[in-house]
Length: 283
Image 1: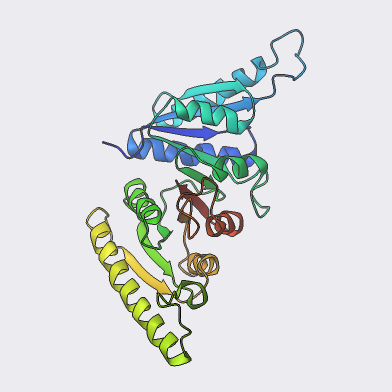
Image 2: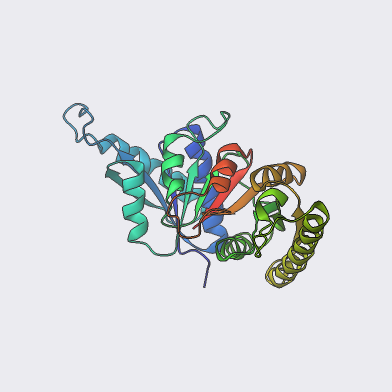
């Protein structure tokens, strides 16, 4: 079974959403998934020449879907509804299990950060969300996944290799000596003890990460790389992505935050707002 059954491209007809539609079409073709172009509109808009306020939008959406369908050789569904993008996307995804949402970073993709739609959708995603910044819609070549070996990041890494099987995947575990060292005895450790404890943690993390990479490599076209970085997670991920360089960065929704938190973790939030590549957030 394919990793996704439906790919939903949110569009407002801006340059950024046009790139999101192109990426969604590429992934739908690759996975044999259904493709839907979705638009949320303001029901309070003024009617044009007596028409329903959304009629022009629906016609334009149908035109875009027809053009995309002709390009990929498959039917493309459309869905337009009144409400905020978060409401419309949430309702559609709720009725279509196995969905992936693809959304542009902001109206002008050249501007850093996220627009209001992308921020709202990725903050509490009901399914994986791919934020598109790059104009190139060919298959990703290099994908960097942030891993802390907890359930959320393992799920993100597994989803990434299934969604992008032809890419070169690289796992990065950021180990921050200031935050990650936890002395179970509660006693104060001297410098030598701290260094020894950190080296032990680093060695264990490296072993576990390479074992994960070995298992994931059985499902990809290329061996999965792995690296443990001694730095704060957000900075390590952004530096690693730039050095690779990565076409897409993958993060679990909670990152290094509380696993039960329903909102975007601080590390993931920093990455999605600062990365210059596309970003996939996996809940």
